[in-house]
Length: 396
Image (cartoon, helix red, strand yellow):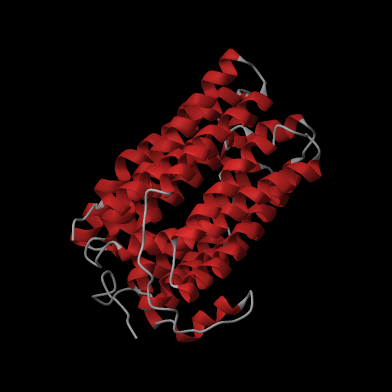
């Protein structure tokens, strides 16, 4: 099997264009929300609720994908919903409409994520998954770097014309949907868990391997204090008063992420997923401590550079690790279970970050997250000392 086959390349291009659309808006939305009257706490709740919606739907649609034995219908509809959500933001500035548009976007992400990741897993071996997921994240993040560049250019040419930005962001989103129709798939064996209710994907925990449970426990502890990246952008805005610097820092983060994701995936396949992941987690702690003490543009840009390395060393690699530890016919359910629980934690983390920021200031918010990251790092050192965990596969 080719390491990067046609399916992997097309799915990566789909993610590239979809992220051009999404990331044109991501660094702009917190600034836009503040301008139309949203408080920091309300922004945190909005992002938390949006991600919570995506999270629960990831689990449900992941299990449904396993039940049906197909991936592409979920991938197509998911990207379509996200594509149309962008121009929806241009219609009204009412809080309830903003909530609806953001939730539509996140619902689309929930529809597609587990099925897409399972499709990537199906097109890799346990020995090549880190680089396959790394390549996908690299292309995805290249789109995430291009998007803010386009947004920055539009802000320079049309200052504060957010409606135009929202409309233009729909174009690459629709291109991503069109690309999916170039793919075909063969039906897979159905899930071994059988049919169930909306929340039945939680049953996966009962049949999950011990390795899977230990990994997910550590990841969720971190997620419980890892709030939306919007708070990092708001910190730059608070310290510098310039929204363009926030966009610029986010571009740097995505460029570093895009460049480093595939090489670090290759490295993880060679020396072990765990080693690269723990190195990335160490960088995460450094980033949040820097945001806690930093007040200058130089510090923020250094922190975002390191943040890009952290993301490259963990995001795709985590998906590869989880899929290696999942039960064959339940791969989408295993990924969906984790991402659902992660999004529940993100909801709580975003609300907590908003409360801490409002009560004690931004520095305390970042110090708390950095401290928890060190605790999680210690957890992984203690519980993952035995060999073979990096490439273990589970099958029933």
